[in-house]
Each structure stands twice: as structure tokens, then as C-alpha cells.
Image 1 (cartoon, rainbow, N blue to C red):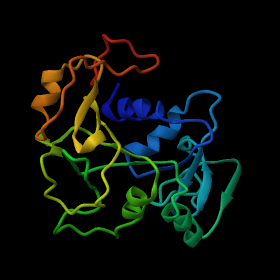
Image 2 (tube, rainbow, N blue to C red; image 1 turned 180 degrees about the vertical axis):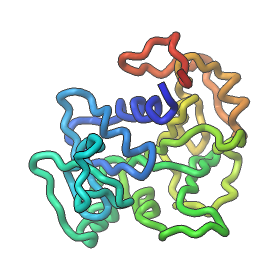
Image 3 (cartoon, rainbow, N blue to C red; image 1 turned 120 degrees about the vertical axis):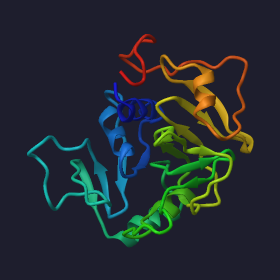
Image 4 (cartoon, helix red, strand yellow; image 1 turned 90 degrees about the vertical axis):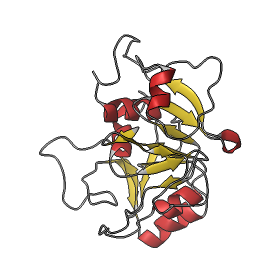
Amino acid sequence: MDAPTLIARRIAQELRAGMLANLGVGIPTLVANYVPPGMHIYFQSENGLIGTGPIPEEGLAQSYLTDAAGQPVTALPGAATFDSALSFGLIRGGHLDLTVLGGLQVDQGGLLANWMIPGKMVPGMGGAMDLVTGARRVIVAMQHTAKGKPKIVRQCSLPLTSTRAIDLLVTELAVIGFEGGRATLLETAPGVGVEQVLAATEAELVVPGQVPQMRIEGMNSIEGASS
């Protein structure tokens, strides 16, 4: 199982029936593919759509039906479209139960940097700042390192997305929480030990006496995160 799939499948376990949830660009979009059977989730896109479904199969994408990043999405029966003013009213008004976003860096207090790298052209700040500030729960989905360098750092060197800390971070190596403002190791990925997580992390992690492994449906403890 590749890293994005592992991360998305683990985050899907955080979904609850009836949630209004937003999925960001990249790995977060994969979460819609792993909604537990029989569970109905209302996925929202900042560009004005509630009721997005899984990523369309090859050849079935519609050019007029996209998410906020312009990527093709599907619409489930009962989906609704509306203008961006209403969409951001939902976000800023605190009506989103959950947002799942990608990340460039997360620091040991849970602050997120994910919207720009200085010196590189970006299309705009998008909705990340509104989502981190307005959603009731914020989960970040990202790989643990980039080009061998830790992305979970003591202090973000990239511009922060919000002064609000995220609630949960899921990588291909671990699940990390930030209750009390301290990065705490909650789970390790199948086949990954605590020492491996610590070696790939710059931030100071609180490590409880017992750290369970992620429980991924259909995946046993022998299967590694990179298999």
C-alpha cells in the first residue's frame, strides 16, 4: 500500500455519519474513496458544491464538475451547487464539522504551514486559512518527510496558514495529536516502530508508555506502510 492510500484510509476512520466535511487538494481528496460502507457524508468544496463523491473513474470526468483546485469530482444524488459567497459563509460561520488539508510543515504545537513557499509563484491563498480557522475539527494529511527532511518541525519556517492549531496529523508513519498544545504520538503505522517515527521527526514528541498501531480495515500488522 502506498503512502497516500494508507493516510487516506486512516483518516476515513475519523468520519462520522451526517458530517459536513471539506477535503483539500492532494492526499485529502482520496479520503472520499474510503468512506465506510453505508455511511453518508456531505463533502463540501469551496467553489460551491455540497455532495461530492469519489474521484471519477477514467473517462467519466466532466469538465464543468470540479473541486476548488479544478480537479474532476463526482456529484452524488441530491448534491447542491451555490456561489462562493455562500460556500465561504458556511466555512467562516463554523458550520463545517471537519476539514482535511495537506501540509508543507506542522510544528510541535500543531501550527500548520500549507499555503505557500516564499519565492515560488502560487495561484492564491485559496480557502486554507478560512478552513483551518472555521472548521470545528482540522486534520492534516501529509507525508512525514520531504526529500529526506522532516516536515514535522520544532517551528515552521514557512508562512503559517492560521494561528489556530490543528487537531490531528496523519502521515504514512504515525498519527499525532496536539491536545494541550503538545505533539503527542498516538499511533504508529503497521510495521513502523516508535524509534523510526522519532528519527524522521524534528519536533519534540510526547510518547506515551504504550503506542498502538493504526488499525486499517483489510490491512494486517505484517504489511508495511510502503508495501
